[in-house]
Length: 229
Image (cartoon, rainbow, N blue to C red; front, top):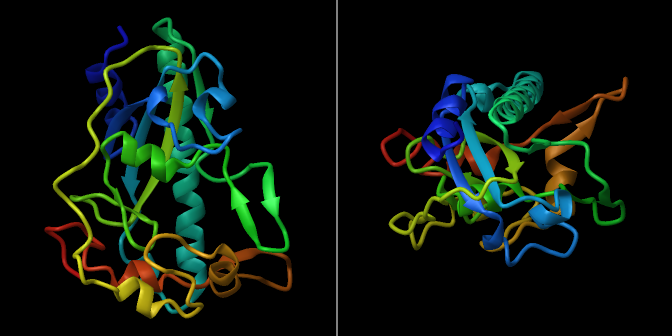
């Protein structure tokens, strides 16, 4: 039986740490072509789930551990999404996966600007799973900014969760903005070109590696409000 309670229970059984639901109608600010119904016209609800990555990978001096951890996290989120689709299909609902990372079609090579088919960060905020930090990284009150996001679109009209209202970045905190080596942040948006020029590089054999996590590291909510810095 498809209910919000059963959906969330199944997501946690599959390995997610938290799960929320957003109404497709709430994506009023999504750019044309990137609304849930632009992806799946029957969509009425977006099921979003998050999972915390191993928290110390970003402190490795060599970029390989963090890069490998990130790629494995994307695989985990896609696995959960695939199983959620099968669960919902088995129970009579239509469901479509949203990739946790690639592939996506929109790419502005000059500005190094990519746009996934759905903004998973915005979906998570709308599903009550956290806030968008000044770094534009999702911050969950319990899990911090070390979470990865997955989502499934469904034709079921499910009661949505409420967005978080009682949690925000510390008003005067600028740690992520000031530490950014590419000066890519202004507290509202991120200049992807400046960010990518510092945070990605390609090896001689063509592998893409992550090379910067400074904004995550310095955030006072890296591990949530009850975690340590």
